[in-house]
Length: 524
Ligand code: AMP
Image (cartoon, protein in one colour):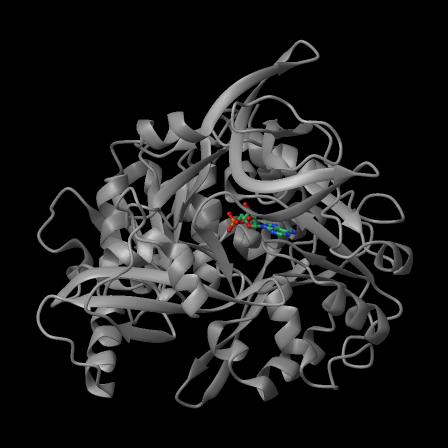
């Protein structure tokens, strides 16, 4: 079946073409410039870019779309879907080496660049098999290329809708493939996360977007809003580090629905001005991606007495989120840690032991997701796909199954999260494989061995420490730390760079020769 999300978007664009779909503010030399896109223009522009793709490309290979919150980024996503191609969103803040890894893995025919600070030649070099277009090209295409698509060209059923690259333990990111069916099934549920029935397009709502579009949390606000005729107010990286601008933008948007990581709301909560008066229309805070603490949920309920707080849980590998629960005063009083909810319709969640036996209520084990939003696997990576994915038949229907490596348990019918079974962490909302940082540290000159340890405060990762064994003598100076930090930035995003660097002549090892992480942990 052609994408139901796209179908609903086209209907919305016909019903209210002048409604703003997307607003953001981009920092320029003269302050912040507001950029907007209506439903009508998103429809016309995406159809024209989609026409360009159909007329100029030879294959249906995924298209890489690079940028940071520019309206053409979103327009390009919709264009890809209308032309039956998956898109691969890449944030322009990623280091060039990381973007090149993604290009190498995808082998695209086209890269769309919606950020003028990105130099296409440095990414593609002399590879004549890859075409690219930038903002100037997009403006030419949307001003003249005429194209009328119909549902027959759209992404459909089990076609990939998007591929999101996440941190990989080998030091190279891995691409998670989400199909059109996955997205439709997710949105069917996402609009029900309310006390008073479904979100619909009878009321025009404003959504806050925080996550960059290269993270799957952004799928929540982008498609829920598109589906229900909402308006998105997208917060850029610059706004996130500029309190005055952030609160001004929030006041201007006066949102109804807030979707972010708990970490971001904790930053917003630091100033008393973040309260019901700043956002009088706020109805709902939706969280995903990391632990929502008791403290944060309690503060939000106090500051926003008219809004509800929803905790959801899920990995990119199962389309954003698969459980949800409204956190009210009753739940806060009864549970600490807070529950992550009950499985959505079409999803079955089991707790399994290491031998993959299903455990009983109260027993802790791996959270295993079975259902209609599970990814079809990792892009071009059969080995990793085989390790993490499987299938299971429930009530006569065969579903894909994903081993999350998250640890959890059921209690009172609710699912609870209690850590990881591997070295993946969440730091300020970002998903990071510790081994990803470690193997990229070995790309930095003069490093023989490197181990990275997370430091926890109140059960949450607060910072990272890298233990380094240099190839030559130990030089524990500020200058050396700065050199390593700068070199490492070429390979991994800023949020993955350890806060502390400790130089050692050797690292402790266990009886079987592995680095003794427990011993290092004791030193933190
Ligand atoms: P991502 O693929 O970036 O969405 O990260 C998925 C991982 O984030 C999950 O496997 C969990 O480890 C963690 N996570 C997601 N939602 C929650 C939540 N509500 N509470 C605790 N951890 C979460």
